[in-house]
Amino acid sequence: MTETTRGMVLRTRPLTETSLIVHWLTADHGRLATVAKGARRPKSPFRGKLDLFYLADFSFVRSRSSELHNLREVNVIDTSSFLRQDLASLQQASYATGLLEQTTETETPLPAIYALLVELLSFLRSHPAQPEAIAAFELKLLDELGLRPDLGSSKMQPGTKRLITGLIESDWPMVGRLKLTAAQQNEIRQFLHGFLIYHFGRLPRAPGQTACQPKARNLT
Image: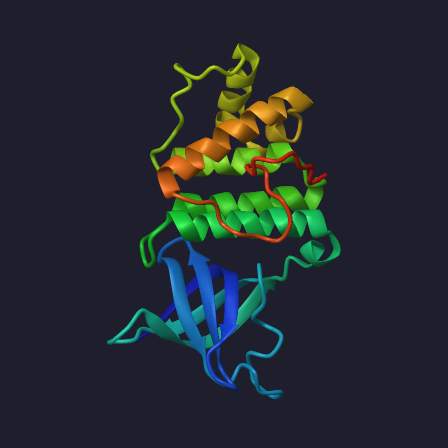
């Protein structure tokens, strides 16, 4: 039976000389892997429709033997072309998808987390890449995963603690108005670095530096 959904391409990789594996994030199916047969052929109907951060309506047929399903049709809604013109924004989006893949299970509905990624990309479309954005994404994701940090025993400054709460609870327009000092950025970076490694064992790899790396960075 053919199923239809909307999703965002998280990554692709070759399967054969002519086919691709496409990993999606969807609201109703969570993370989903599909095979795009013949997608690498010059005249494939998938040609130009499967790239990182493409948002699309697509249909697929479930495999009976694996979690690798057969992709049937793709209708692109948005190509996120702005990311190909802004390296810092691309780095932040890549880090975010790596963190999602590391912290979520496959084929589990993730409506709130799907919305979070879409909101991050919408934010990056209209704002320069900034440390506040990726810190907000990390904190909001942790909150959705039931891992909201307990700041009571933290040695961070009270003002930094209030900012962390603000980054979790504020909508994205408000995040764009929050400005952290260099000292606050460092405190939050060090805190999140330790918190994420404690819970997930490692940090995802992504091009460039990320907001939670231990060394100083600036993605603006």
